[in-house]
Image 1 (cartoon, rainbow, N blue to C red):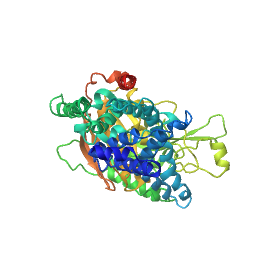
Image 2: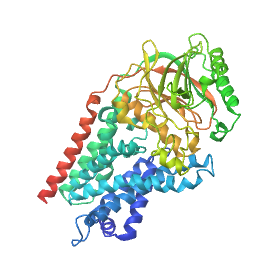
Image 3: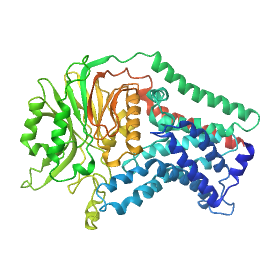
Image 4: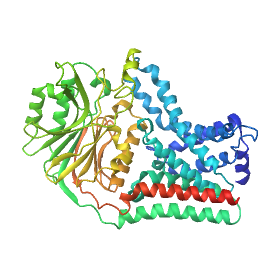
Length: 528
């Protein structure tokens, strides 16, 4: 193995770039739906060995000296994001050929941009590099900072954070309840990369093995304890029905098909209960933009919802909400991607708007200029969406409040964690039909599981084409509808868990790890 590491260390030019790209692409196999997390124990050690040899020429300038390290990290990230995000291009085929020209931007452009974060991480790590095991902790801290930056730079896009790769199942998700998603990025890279030092001699090998056993053993032990010995959440008592109409996205966009889609939603919502042990559903949930027209413009549709709902039932529906500017003559309208609560009398009792919109999907950055050039947002028709002023909780009933998460808002763990925890649930409505039967919907569902664990709250997820389901506060799937399956499922809503010790200090835990790991690297380099 030492001979192999030496061969990898000596690679340069296109060979180094190719290997970095390949191991990045292989690392994506640790993501949903594959969950081959053990691949990280191969790919990250190779990345370490590549960085061991990523040294710029002595005569190069201060900036040029970092090029080998940057490009090593960049190609690793490029491979990881191409393999993990290629499915985004499927959304551009829904209205092809109008958006087909942008497919290369989705498949290659977005990964190329995201890979800059990983390139910056390897430059930072290489600046404090040494020949000891300490370099692995520096690498972990650097990737942790890069992933933290991905949560907010350019509006943020932390999809497929590296922490996801070491959390394939509820058993391996429980650590995040205590340290949070940001710290898990640091610990995941450290755990995956430590085997690079297994083949050195003397105390370095023993130290690496010891650190590896502590990290991986602790990670698994927390999972075993929390799933088997910690208190279980009691059932909240309310029965919830999730409706999954499985409507093809191109059908939703066809003029005249709105009534067909709406009638299908009503029919699925009215189906008799299959499980005789359950009471009648108290809440019915429809997915994101489930109603293919502006609901408030159609009083007969609102009346049909009221007729469908039994006494005491409520509907939580993902819809497009329209707001007329009172200062105009009615011609100025704003549209919001929203979640509405409708009672059995057809009255909208509360609403929550999406606050974190998808750039180029739901709105156009620099819209005035881009519209002159013929651009428009992919998923917003010609109207475009406005973001909600602030994230609001959704009061469901007395004593039950929901955190509404529309579409990819569920991937922003840091934003959700900063919200005040409610005695209720999280509701994620989404329309993953844009992405077809690809890894996208599976990755999205997996991240919903992680948020449930981190928040200690159940997650109810309604997706147009799937995957829909009930996730308890420990990330376990209680019931679900698979991708492409049409139907409705009923389940009793689990209760929230007590806030884990350390949850309110997750930001401090993250930065403590970064500082600690960076200090280890700096001290080792100074001594070396």
